[in-house]
Structures are given as structure tokens and as C-alpha cells.
Image (cartoon, rainbow, N blue to C red):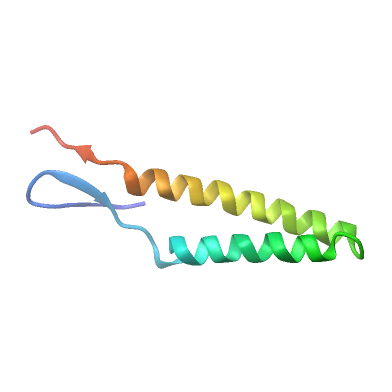
Length: 75
């Protein structure tokens, strides 16, 4: 992840478009819902979807952590 420096000395990370927080949260909810719906009919697919949802949840937490950090650069 590249960093972008502004004139006042703060660092703001430049996130790729694929890490859109709203889109990731929607995809996470979709995986959870689909996994729940498939739980009785296809347990293996349901497990895979729960696993993917868990990975997305961790990615969302990491993105939120990066976005909320306010790093100061001492000159």
C-alpha cells in the first residue's frame, strides 16, 4: 500500500478501489446469508461461504483500522 503525503505532514494511505468498505460489508453479508440458506442442503458449500465471510470480516477490520489511524510525521 502506497502512502500519500500532504503538506501539513499527515500520512493518508491510498487504498485500491477493490477495498471499498461498503462493498466489502455488502459482500460479507451476502456470504453469510447465502451460507445460512445452504446450511441444510449443501453443508460443504455453506462451510466454504462461512470461511470466505470470516476472511472478509478480517479484511474489513484491517481496512477500518487503517482508515481510523491518524499518523503524524515528525519533521
